[in-house]
Length: 113
Length: 114
Figure 1 (tube, rainbow over the protein chains, first blue to last red):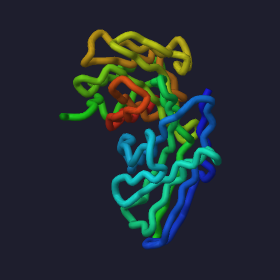
Figure 2: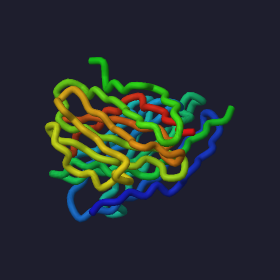
Figure 3: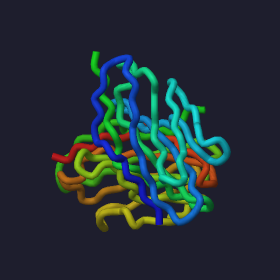
Figure 4: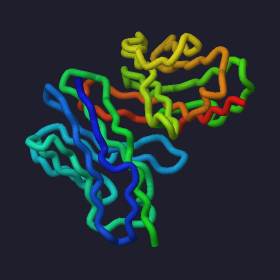
């Protein structure tokens, strides 16, 4: 069975500051990892995903994430955030051969001016 | 592509009434998922279909909830009778076969049961 833990429920940060949203997962099989973003009153949309290969994955809007197998982590980072990055971010895991994606509880990023 | 389409976008109903939520997945996607999102419980998977067949409905909270997918381009989620605790945002999502494929979410239906 797989599970996802997002370590912070809320992250307040000032505009132009760097941010890291933390995600840990557990799985007994190889995994695919995702970060989704949900803007207010919208559905979730994909930010980036890790399937295999390079452990550093770049996504849209300047976000990137690093897959760390030994620490079973997939933290999301951005070097300089904008007000428009205010949203909820979901980490998700899917097992190789499986079709059910497990979502974390979400981290609400609040960017202040 | 138009993306995943959900209707209605907002629904306000009274306790005891039947509610039907509708979803049109992206053409060519063979997986369809129904989720419920609330502040208290976050994002919950209710049920998912593969090639129009329900695969896992273990997330459906009660017998009052039912879902159907009569063809590849249409699915419904029905609540009968509705209760105030069913108030939530309901999302439909679709994807192609393979755990490596992302899910594409619709805009959601905000349901309020008075």
